Length: 165
Image 1 (cartoon, rainbow, N blue to C red):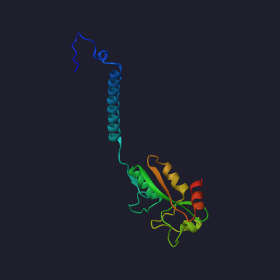
Image 2: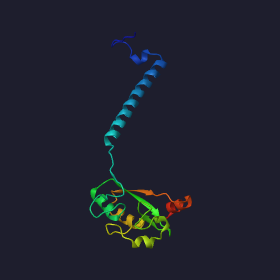
Image 3: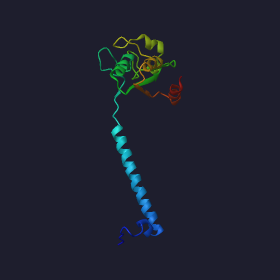
Image 4: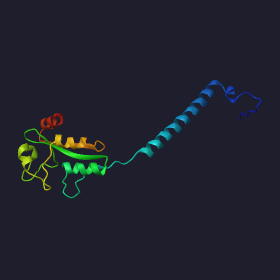
């Protein structure tokens, strides 16, 4: 065992070169581990659970899922995001509606937009287009949009839906 007193050389001069290198490596490894632990701790403390309104906040009076009013309620509530569903109509219009069914129509993807637009929802609203929905979304950009593009009957229709302006 090596011991040193104040009159002796510094400890790092007493060790051969390979031992100096090993000591330096251990020193820097400890520093690196300490830094990693600190960064992990800070990131964990800063991380927060985000609340997302599924199909907008539609569990309110006179509101229905995937409508402009549901998006407005989600924005007013101050949630992080609002999820919505996009379907493409037979004539190529992108609409915000969850299911394939709307009123008497069994498949919105096989129905023209004008026909769907003429049918009101339970709360008196009409099925919004994606453009109408985006106009409202831009009014409060703190609430992010999480958009689900619903599956279509062919890969070509899905590709067209994704590429639509």
